[in-house]
Image 1 (cartoon, helix red, strand yellow):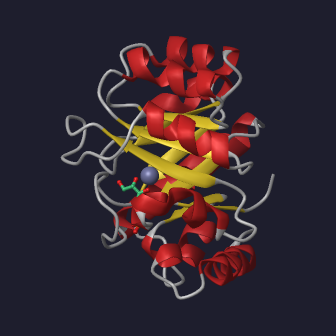
Image 2 (image 1 turned 90 degrees about the vertical axis):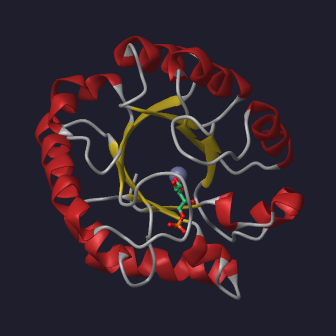
Length: 220
Ligand code: DX5
Ligand code: ZN
């Protein structure tokens, strides 16, 4: 699939989501952070707002569920029409069953890993999923500093995916900017979430183009 940029609306103006998503230029995806104030110490939005977004944009919606009990809640996002639905490894009770359910409902299934969660247990389960999300901050808030300590895990994730021969995307999320995106691409990431780096820029569409160019230069 190649390099994809997924701006996170967490850093946008929540009172103007339609316009905020429309000004993302040629970003491949729009990343929507769902937080429940249990899995992470922050509360954002849920299914009704995602449904409203889906009704107002043709851009594929990438839902990042930072919630407890994803086995119960994640299928609703797939049913609503989200392109990707990512649940967290730490929160899922039956991840294989859940991933199969998401796919059955027509979404791509993603698994998120907090900085301290290893990727190795997922090696044999890669055929069940479409994306691994390697968090490069502790999930919960935008605008945090990128954690370089997560780079070796991105590398190991890429090795596992390459060895499997499967087309599993590797997404990075947290502190991704013009300063850090090359390191992520060099380590093997191919889907890049960026919140403050896109919405904090004067021209969001230009920031997307710049990030993609930097990633392309550093990718192998
Ligand atoms: C944080 C969210 C991110 C957040 C990234 O837990 O998962 O998607 O929006 O924001 P930046 O790019 O500002 O670190
Ligand atoms: Zn996110």
